[in-house]
Length: 170
Image 1 (cartoon, rainbow, N blue to C red):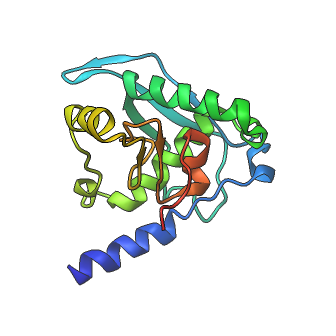
Image 2: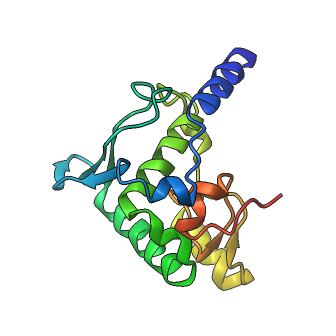
């Protein structure tokens, strides 16, 4: 377990991408979406980085990710809601922000998805019950990729905030 923790810490350090407003306006960093492809689990889009990364990151981070169409639309809606209330996010495209967020979570999961089990959630039925029966309206340990309730806290505020995160719970 300690070895896996050390490896994960190394990946987090390697992928420590922080988007700041000055770098968002840099036209060399952009991401594009491809046309959807059908898979056994539903239609997916490819989000691909175009342009150049800083030399120390080039070749060390994935340049593309596949994501389900339904998930990308939910993220796009959250981004648009947040952009309308929080002006600084307009400095980078939805696609560039999405790529940065996916890269950060890939770092958490590890190069071969060793930590992907950390990204678990309750079922929709459980969340419905929590909302209806107990008045719960915010998740404390979620991410843009697995949030269900309208408000949520997440670990990476710098890349998650533009998708609606309220920041860290702690």
